[in-house]
Structure formats: structure tokens, C-alpha cells
Image (tube, rainbow, N blue to C red; front, side):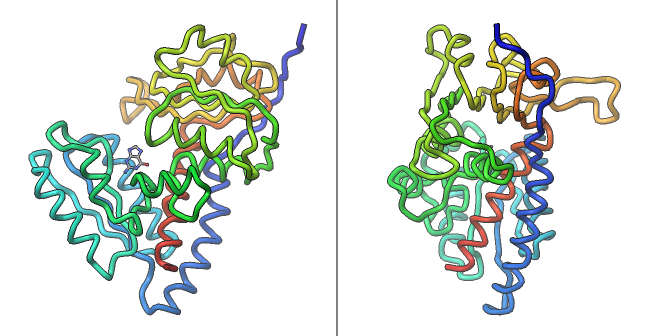
Length: 296
Ligand code: GUN
């Protein structure tokens, strides 16, 4: 019988972000002094999805805190695809703008693929354009997708050993699961993992998840990963974030991840909390990408 690990360490994305953002602020000041203007990020929000609004507001706030300029462009849900593509074209050509993002998801009548393809890869600080995805796969310089890159930085910050470990990624989305599997398998530290990517068609998911030394659930199912699915001593990085109704909170909800934290944490060597884990690191990655864009 294996014994349970009863003390776990927190992969604290807030603390790691603070340390990294302090360094970003120092470099931003240098860029500003050198170029005569601060790094500049624009964010486009279409429609009134509450969660998206919260994320975009956090991104704008984070920019101000590190000395970046930011522009928030809010459009109603009836913005046409053509109008959005026109805005992207203008932002691509705007010399005062270093990078921009279009917050996803978009209203159904707008084709996200078309939008992603329309963004100039040199300003694609989300790292979603196929050119940047291709560069990531080949290990060429480019912009890495913010969430998976943030997870790599979180593991780096806490010195988590990854080489030779079995990493199981749950979920194959274009913006998290798929790029995450690439970053964890590449010949780099953190990285050098043996990676398994699982998805909705995976047979006997629990038994595969249970083999993970490093488990990265990104499935969008609240508290889906339970203690019986996690190996003793595993490192768990929870990408999920869900609002659960909670009448005892002033906001009326509480945030949970894809992992049932209270029962899973005691089995882990390291685990990231929700909130305060991957979320702040995603924004930190976006700041790192924007700084890189500003440096040219
Ligand atoms: N929606 C969920 N995550 C992201 C992200 O990292 N960037 C954008 N643009 N939209 C998202």
C-alpha cells in the first residue's frame, strides 16, 4: 500500500505572479525610457459575458500595475464579424500598439478561427495564431499561448522537477490542452515529460489520470477530478475556473476548479488553488508577451 502525503505545497500563482510582475515593471520602465512610450496592450471584449468581462478587467488592471498602457475596447454582442475584422486590421497597422487580444468566446455569429487568423502574428500576444502555434511546436521564437506558458512559469517559479515525469493533460482545447501537451514534452526545463493527452473519447480516463506524476486538468467540469483519481505525491495544476452559486457569499457565487481541492490536496506534493493559481499566471504570461512585443 502506498501511504498518503498529508502535507502539500501550494503552487501559489498570486505570489509567483507578484515576483514576475515586479521584474516586468522594471523592464517596462526601461522600455518606456528607451522608446519614449510604454508597452501598449489593447483588449477587445465583444458582448456581455460576465466571466469574460472580469478577465479582461483583470488584464487591464495588471497592465497599469506594471506601467503598461492599455486600451479596453468594449463592443455590444451585435457587432458584426466584418466590423470586428475591420478593427483587427486597424490594430494590426497601428504603430502605437504593441499587441492586442480578442477575448474568447465570441458571440456565435462570429467565426473565431477567422478572427484568430486575421491577427498579425507579431501582435498576437495571446499566441493563438497558427504561425505562433507552429513556432511553439518547432521551438522557434514566437508568442506562447498565455495559459500553458503561465503554467510552465508557475512550475519554474517553484522549482518543480518535471524531467522524465509522466504528465497527463486532461482536455485538448486549442488554447490550453493541446499547447500544454507540447510545452511539457519539449526538450526544456520545465518540460522533458512523457505526456499523455486525454479527452472526451478517452477510455478509462480515471486509470490514466491516476498514473500522472503531473496532472493538468483543463476540461471545464467543476470538481471533476476527485481524490480516487489522483496518485499519492502528484503535482496538480488546475486550469478550471467555474462560478458555483453560493448564497452565503455577497457575490452570490464562489469559484471552483476542475479539481475537488479539499479532498485532492492532501494526496498531492504540489497543487494550485482556484482562484489564485493558474488565473494570475495567465495574465502574467500575457504581460510577458506584451513586453516582448514592445521590445520588438
Ligand atoms: N478566453 C479564455 N482564455 C482566454 C485567453 O487566454 N485569451 C483570450 N483572448 N480569451 C480567452
